[in-house]
Amino acid sequence: MRGSRPRAGRAGAAIVGVLVALALLEIVVRLAIAPSPAQVLRGLHRATPDRPWLYELVPGEERRDASSPDVVYTINEAGFRDRSYPRTKPEDTFRVALIGDSVSFGYGVALDATFAKQLEGRLRSLVTGPRYEVLNLGVSGYNPYTEAELLRGVGLAYEPDLVLVQFCINDLNDPTLHFDTSTMLALGDVPAAAFPDPDARTARPAPLRDGRVTRLCDRSRLCSTLAGVLAPATANEDLVAALAPHEAPSPAEIAWLERSYARMAEDTRARGGTLAVVVFPWETQLAADASATLQEQLRALGERAGFLVIDLLPAFRRAAAEAGEPLFLDLWHPTQRGHQVAAQEIFRALACARLLPAVTARCDP
Image (cartoon, rainbow, N blue to C red; front, side, top):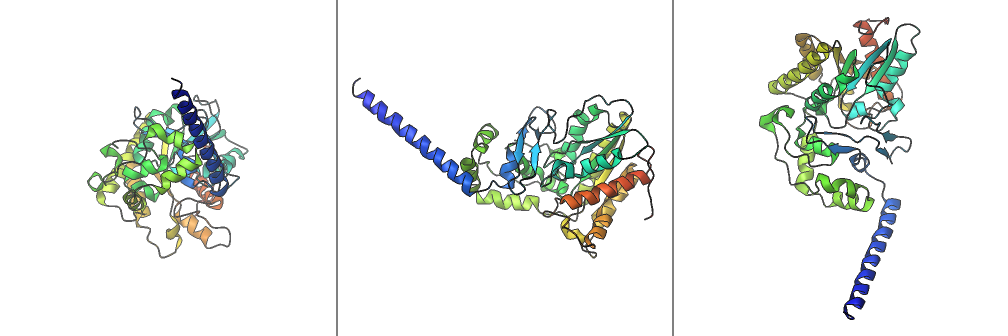
């Protein structure tokens, strides 16, 4: 017994020494290495295996974007990056619910710079008509499958008069890794209905971490940095392939979009509202000679299914021809200026379609 005490003491001292060393290394890493965008966003998400939308934002979480110190991602008590709104719509209020992915979420820009809040501000500046609210229900990585599930399970409970569904080209990516990338969680089996083309789905590599330890690791810059360094090369290659632009959708993918949007339109109409799809371009489409075939296909889809499709490409091309700040942060995420262009064109298109009470606009092509 006497001999065991010194050994226990030495073991305890060794453990304390290791913990102190790790703490010092954590401080060094935090001072020397800025968090990556993925590290910033990881802790904002949680898996929801009991919900058909698979994952969601964590109520009350907050992260600051190190690459843009003025950008803070604050999640409200309902689990969305927005101010708080009551579920029951107030009287004399016209409510718009926005469903989408990281473009709607507002990756890389402040909350008030997102097109949702800029649209809300413009609507609220009107001297006539009801009070307008634009609720941002965007979640990074979502596609029309998860958007339809969230709209049915949560969004329609806010009693929206108008639902805007935001489309991005990465909606057509294979969600096997796309969903995991946005959350940095292993979500398990993704339903076949979530795939634009189930026959083209890729094999999921073994995850480096599972959901039970992800949030703990993400509290540490050292742990999350090492996790990124140690990620299997095959997983990184699969990730690049999964997130690559998919500019020529197959008939199966167009049919999948039509089913998803038709379901959302039907659910919205059943609750007394109207649905419109907002199609964002991607950066390489700004060239005048770039293909716009996908936009043409989506407009035709809307005509068949009976809902408005707002194509933002012409407005973005006009803005790109003018001197000013860039419109995109990367391939598909708009800058603050890009969000402003989107908000202006969405306002004009909704007014021209007579979807906004007591609002008129110049509707020349």
